[in-house]
Length: 227
Ligand code: BMP
Image 1 (spheres, helix red, strand yellow):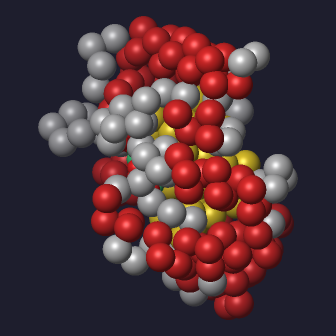
Image 2: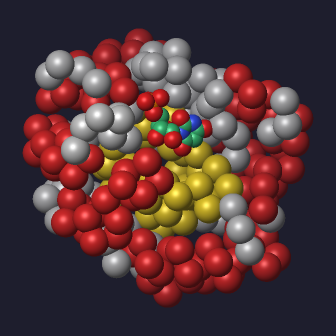
C-alpha cells in the first residue's frame, strides 16, 4: 500500500464525473488519493466534498501547494478540510516563522496531516530548489510535519532526505510514469509512498493500471531490498 493516485482531470472532461468514475474504478487498491488545484478550481469545495464522499482511501491529500503567510495558509486549510481531506501539502521555502509553524498549529487543531514539499520533480527544480535543498530539508526537520514531498525523478535526493530527516517523516514521491521515474524507484531510495497521476488516470483501464503499478513496485522493491 505505497501508492497514491493524483486526480488531475484533463481539459475537456466533466471533472466531477471523471473523478468519481476514477475513484470507483481504482477502489481501495491504492493507499490514497491526491486532489489539487486543477480539480478544486473546476468543481469547488462543495463538489470536492461530494467527490471525496465516495473515496474509501485512508489518505485523502489536498495538494494546494500552499506558499503564503501562515494566516492565509490556515484559512485555505480550514476551508479545504471541510471536504474530507485529511492531509495538506505546503512548500518548505516559505519557512517556519509566520508561515509553516502557524499552519502546523492549524493542522494539529483540525487533525489534518501536514506534508511539506522539499524538492520538486521537474527539471527546473535544479535551478533554484536543488542548490538550497539542504536548507529546505532543515525547515522540514525542525518543523517535524507528518510527511514531506521529494522527487521520484531524483532518487539521490530521496536518499539524502531520508538520511537527514530520519524515519519519523513520511516521504511521498511524485514523478513516476509521465515524468520518467519507474514504479518502485523512489521506494527503493527510501520513500514511503509514490504519487502517480497520468500513468493511471490516462490509462484505458485505470483499475488494471493500478494493479500493474502495485505489482511493479513490489517486484522492484523485492529486487532492491532483497526481501
Ligand atoms: P503525473 O504522475 O501525472 O506526472 O502527476 C504528478 C502529480 O504530482 C501532479 O498532481 C503534480 O502536481 C504532483 N507533483 C509533481 O508532479 N511534482 C512535484 O514536485 C510535486 C507535486 O506535487
